[in-house]
Image (tube, rainbow, N blue to C red; front, side):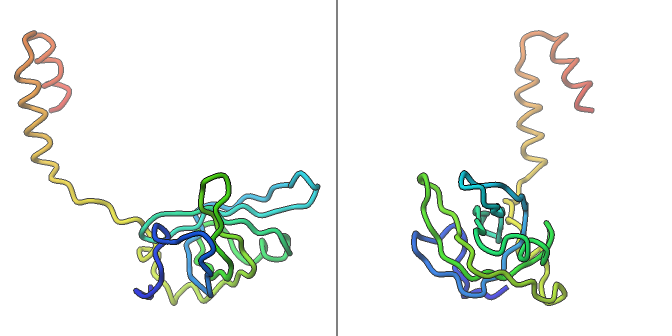
Length: 141
């Protein structure tokens, strides 16, 4: 993924989005109060995810992609009810082989499992009730 792209977590109200790739995490068709269909998307990159709305050509654009696909979007960031969302003007589905889904997955923190386990054992060993201590130790082993 292009490192020059603005991360989702850094996007601001009214920021334009030009042919930016995102991973589609969820896709739901809905019906607005005005009786017109809309498409609600949850799109993401390594920094997080953001809601996106398609108001025009809903059926046509919905047929282009599925959840789990990489899509490129042209649109604009908007704050609605104190939450950022993307108003989508155009969607395209690029060649999926040009992307690696790992490029769009949130990076997790590396944790030291052994350190946490040692800390847990210390806490269990500090319990006063030997019966409860033994039950917990047996369930951990």
